[in-house]
Length: 424
Image (cartoon, rainbow, N blue to C red; front, side, top):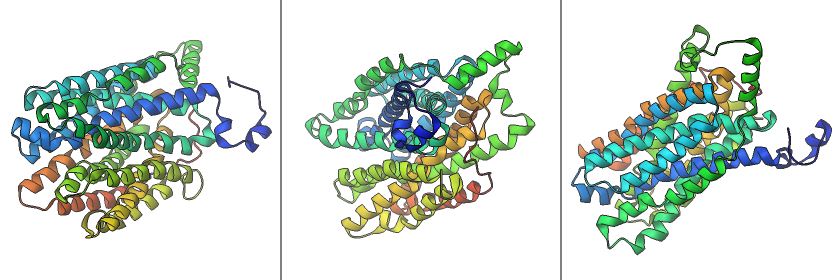
């Protein structure tokens, strides 16, 4: 049921796209968006305080990078678990659990008294991070009008860049006031997202359940069917290739992104550059690019064409992003890498939702995305390891970005085009 005034199909087609979405649909969408923003914030704020953590616990760069890797690995657990629960019991419950979980372990991470404790808490944090994506994306997209799914997908995925942008601002504006308390400064940064997350939790409590999921439950009740565990459905003959292909594709996407971003604040510091302007351009580019390329995926080239364009231009931007001598050229590289390489993600939520049927959509999108996260989780550790072995940070990042990016484009074209598929 649409909220607000009634419009027939002819009237709807003449309205601006944002007025074709009801108040209830906007509420579900924006609440999921901000939950994902804060999820990304709590993950990326760690990247700004790696040097402080190294000093606090006397660990090398590889172990510092491993804090990112363990979070990404545990996202697999959260994504599969929450996705399975979302298919059986509804989308909303696992989202609420995930928000509470990642907030609790972000706070506990800041209270760590040893590297081992921090390592464990960042791993457990990843469970909530993975659960939020797996249950949240189906909820938002199943509320949304089908013909607007491309732009919705782009805005949703841009929430990660928005979270990174927010962490950049909090670090730049807040850290100088506490940096003299080195032992506490990084802890306060890790705690800084807790209160906003509780506010989002309260609003999510009032969001209605997915209408598509509810309709499926009514059909099952009418037909007297017994619902099978959705995780097992992923390995049926008709979905096995879908599960394998999307997992590998997401592994390539995640490898590009983590190779691009995890060590980037550290690189800027070693170049004696103030990170804020570079990170603003990188993440504003990612946010705008996700929306632009997500919208493009409804028209030119479909899902595969828009993502390929973004990834190819992103790879061509690597010399500007990492190796330029001029700070102005480095700024241009940050914008291009954000708009194109990060923007290529704009079609991902819609694309994954379109690859899996309703009865396995939560676990399918969660499994594929987070199996990919598990594959891509090696990138932060690998770049740290290469540095410990004497490789320049820029060279290590470039090697990982280009290798994963080429693989990403190849995998995109091994799969089908999904633009226009119904989620019913």
